Image (cartoon, rainbow, N blue to C red):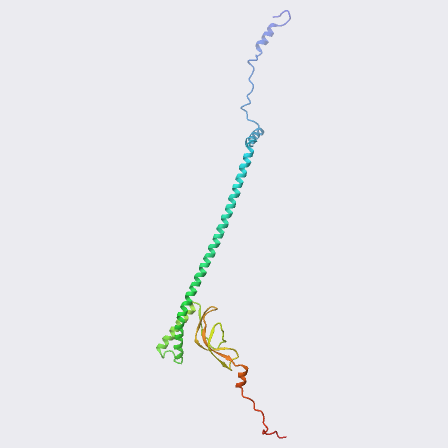
Length: 242
């Protein structure tokens, strides 16, 4: 159909009918459900982790408080460690001191026992000396005395105790107590000639000195007295023949 204006109404109506209206236009795609980009996700996470400007002083104060508590705990741990080390050292020293005191008490007890037994040993030695010419087996009582003395000396040796009973040795004032001394031309230094009562020592420490008789060397004037005077030739002495 053609109008006066030369327009084709049928074609126009057809185009109008076939053209979709604005109401029937396709919907826009919904982008809210789509995943965000990776950069946007990281930015959101960092934004969530970063404290807000108002919370920053509180966070710093909290970290400082934790640091101070940690330093305090370390100081206390170091103090307790030093205390434990000092306590352990004191315990070790205490054990050593107790052991030393125990040994000292033991030594003193042994010394007391020695003073009680030394006179017995001296009596046995004197009885044996009186019958020194008697051969073993001739006198059963003397044999018993000898065995008893040997047994006591063995007990002394087991406890580190030595008797001082040697003769013909140089006089030692730390080991010998002279009860009698006499000059002798046979010695050049003071010598122990006889032991009246034997002494006792433990190691290098003398518990009881020996009672001895000492021989001392002659003095110069005593030597002159002992030597016979040389005879001077007198007037009546015969002269040598020429």
